[in-house]
Structures are given as C-alpha cells and as structure tokens.
Length: 149
Image (cartoon, rainbow, N blue to C red; front, side, top):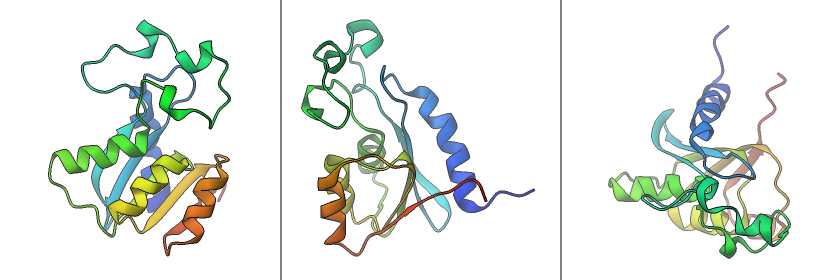
C-alpha cells in the first residue's frame, strides 16, 4: 500500500536519525515544501568536532534532566541542523513544513518561527511548556502524526 505523504516523510526520518551521534536520543528532521525535500538534519555535534561517543555526554555526567540546560550539550538539534543546512546551501524554507520524530524544544521552536516555517508535524510529544506557549502566539500549524491509521 502506498504511504501517505506524512508516512513517507516519517519513514525517511527513521533513516535520517540513524546518523545521530547523540548518546541520549536519536532525532531526525526533514523540511519540505510542496512535498519536496528541501533539507534534512539529525541531532549531533557540529562538523569536524569530536562526537559525544568519543568525549562523553556532559548532560549525562551532570544528571541533567531531559529538556533542561540545552546549552550544556555539545550537539545541535535535528531541527537546528536542517535549518542551518538550508541556509548554508541557499535553500529558502519560508512557508515550508518541518517533520520531526520529537516535538521541537523552545530553542528550535524560536528558530522555526523566525525561519518562516508554517507547519510542524511531529510523532512523539516532547514536554516543553515554553515551546507550547510560543507556538500559541503564532499561526503555525502544529500536529501530531499518528501512524496507527
């Protein structure tokens, strides 16, 4: 059976997130417009920087709970890397949709807002009250994908 567009992009995210170098959670993102892929990203350290598997995870060492103290992480989030990739290669993403397997945090949400992304489609809810509050003040469509039909 032919997958829906949403399922198609989430299938692709499953492959994208395999490149993640995060020791805690693998996240992938794909930015699309008119059902065409514009950019992809996964969570991990900046290019040419030692991976967490080599250096260790400072957040884990300090027992930082999920969703807190993002600045202590060596890596970037999948959404950030996708937006940066689009910018680096001159790909306009205004009016696009971002798919990600985890709902964006408040830092990524701020970037998504300013990038002009019009829709967020995620699979797993990520609890970040500030992200929810920020999104309520926008006209960005936010929806959770249910792959159970």
